[in-house]
Length: 180
Image (tube, rainbow, N blue to C red; front, side, top):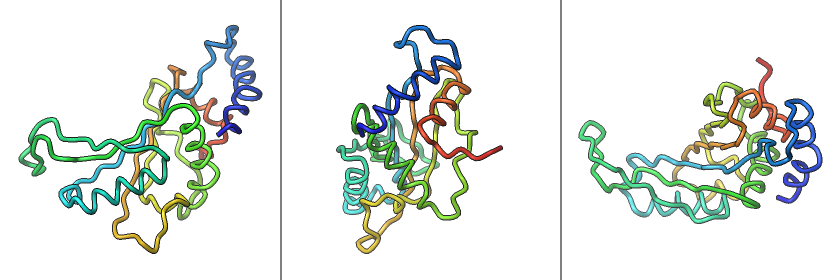
């Protein structure tokens, strides 16, 4: 966790300032937060399975997840208002840097047939979104006591405002983008 914060202060911020002409150190883009979201769908009706999803997400992030309830009923999806449809965690500060470090150095290389993350996951405002099909790539989850495999949606929110600046920021942190 301290490793990435130190890397930002010593390497990433000066390179961004030089490349994009930031004169004030406070105007240099930084990673603001990381939001991890899990949609539970049909398994959300089973309380025992939902508890295991929450426990696994807590082990991965180091923070207690929040259960997200449906705001309104949708008959086509068989969802009622107030029914749990997802679980999410918002990470900031040291936990955020710790999670990003774990994601880059441990989890992404363990993905089957990994060739890098696509650089098309930017949203036009400098935020990056990444999906993982299995949560098994994280070392905190033991595959022996596993009943359900679920996917994660990871959103990295930056203060960049533009995709090219955010891409450079994440590149300097060590994100393995594919050469497209």
